[in-house]
Length: 171
Image (cartoon, rainbow, N blue to C red):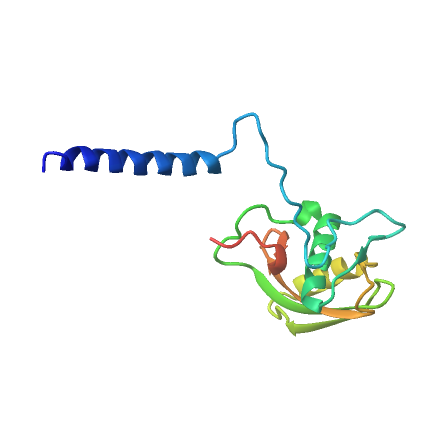
């Protein structure tokens, strides 16, 4: 069997060359860029408020209250940028509240309903309600007509907040 080692050598060499060819075919050359396929979201969302007389002149094409929640949170963040807590929230928050917001066909807030109000901090309840009412009109829910969406408010003792929809997490 004097020809066994050379046969094994050539077989391994051939397999290595084939693997190298496959790997090099998968790579793109440094000067060549492959055009990225555009990502089309399931429902286009609002990226922030467009200044109008008051609030946002944008419309939302959300098809569910959960999808609209993203648009509402983005709208609130855009109008309250200085009040948004940057980074991860601390482990102990001053207040947490869960609020239902009803938006009519024109984007106006028609009703606020607390699912879980931070009763130990009535000033936070009043401030959150003021923030939401002053943000009206919200993006118009064109596909939903009117909408009731729910979001959780995470409130820091310094008066800054995050919404659960857009939170950066908690330490």
